[in-house]
Amino acid sequence: MTGLLLMLGLVLKLGITTIITKKVIIFGI
Image (cartoon, rainbow, N blue to C red; front, side, top):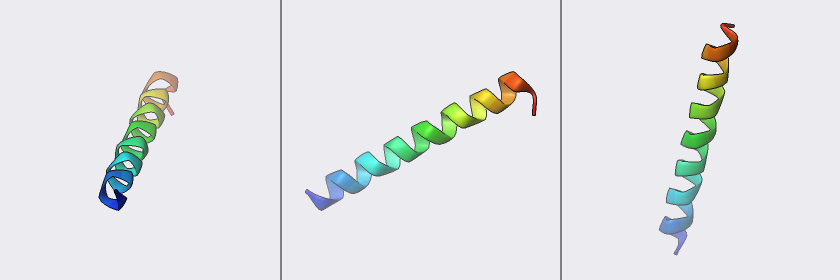
């Protein structure tokens, strides 16, 4: 159960990082 939550957190963190990276590329900062 704890491992599942850890994996979910990791996926969420990776998703947020991807969104931020895409926004940076779009805005050209």
